Each structure stands twice: as C-alpha cells, then as structure tokens.
Amino acid sequence: MQRYLWLVWDIVATLTFVVIGMHAHGHRLALSAVATVWWPFAAGLGVGWLLARSRAGEFWPGGAVVWLATLGLGMVLRLATHQGVVWLFVAVAGFFLAVFLLTPRLLAAMVVRRRHSGGLTASSR
Image 1 (tube, one colour):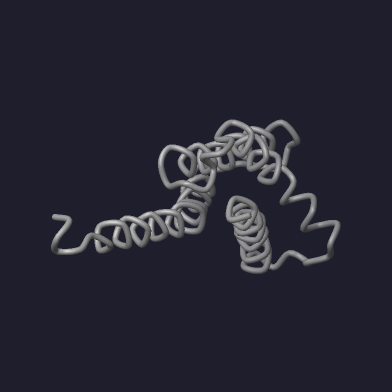
Image 2: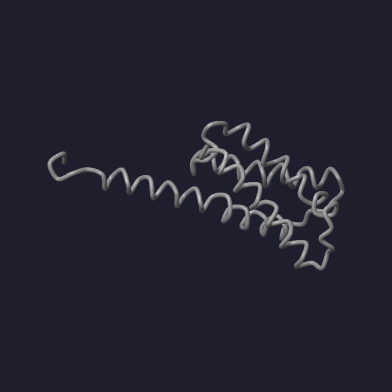
C-alpha cells in the first residue's frame, strides 16, 4: 500500500508543478490546458515507475530513476510535440521535481533508518 501512496504523491507533485508554472506565466488553468502541459511529465513519471518497479518509493535508486525519467522524458516529449523547452525551464523543472519527488523519499529513508538504529536496546549492542 505504501508504494501506491508514493505514486499518488508523485502524480500530485507533477500536477502541482504544472499548475504553479502555468499560473506563474498567466496561462489559463482549464482542465484541457493543464492536461496538455502535464501529459509529457506524466508519461515520464509512468516510465520512471516502470523502470524503478518495486524500488520507486525509495530515495536511491528508485526515486532517482523516477525523477530522471519524469524530467528527461517530459522534456523530450515536450520537444517532440513543439511545446517548447529552454534551458532555464529545464533547470527550474529539474529543481522543483527533485525537491518534490526526492526530498520526501530522503526524509522517509532517514526516519526508517533512525527507527531501526534507535530500536536497539543497550543489552543487544
């Protein structure tokens, strides 16, 4: 179940990225317009999840694969469909997606590690 929560998180994160970007640039937020901008990143996200498989919810390597596929394939598909790609957009998208796709995984890994290391009793050390 936890794995699917990561998928839901990733979908919401990529949608949030698209909506914030469109709003910041004064684009209308009609469902069709959001879908047009979002689908390349959604496709990249899907490919990332297929590549990472059961490790997609982990920071490394799964999260990194999901992030790279979302960003890389998203940009390639935007280029292929003439949606436009400039280096500054790639940098901003890469940063935003890294923060929202990787940081939660890193924090979750740190919590799990802390629980496991803190679970040892004095007599078991």
